[in-house]
Image (cartoon, rainbow, N blue to C red; front, side, top):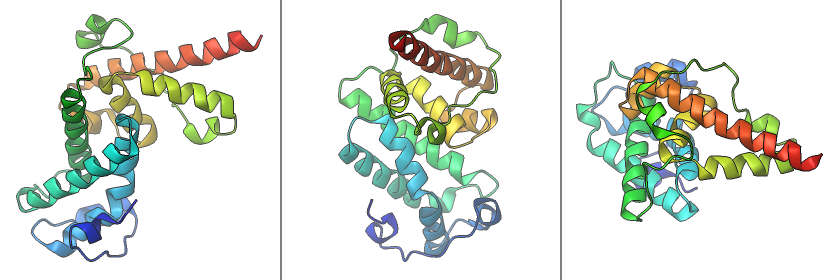
Length: 204
């Protein structure tokens, strides 16, 4: 992926660890925003790429994320989390793109009415893409399952299991209650488990 800092006319800067540097992202300067781009462009692009059907869409949306962030950077509350802010912009743009393309954002394979209000206890068993890569057939099946999920379920799964956001951070990023985050994660993991069970049954 091309460097977004260059696209926006921002000189790339060297980045240290996220926890050390996030507190230094003080709104109001090109230099500060350049650090944001360097730190998060690949993570945002990775999230977006799994939310949209094509790499071209992912490139366009990722660029738009940082353009919008740059336009609003002076108004960003430095006490807030930069990464949840960026993922919120990214998610909203993905949903907008899906709607414009005529894809439904509401459709979920499992019972959506249960997902809306009821809070589930979510077992702390993460989807681990690095481990799954060791089994190419399993990886392909899991990727297919993720691709068939609604944006609502997919976004929560990716933010929690791949981007390591907490329930509270996901709640902030997506603008939904923590209980809804948990129930969507429960449903998303259920769909992955079903895909794995199907593969196991087929291999017997």
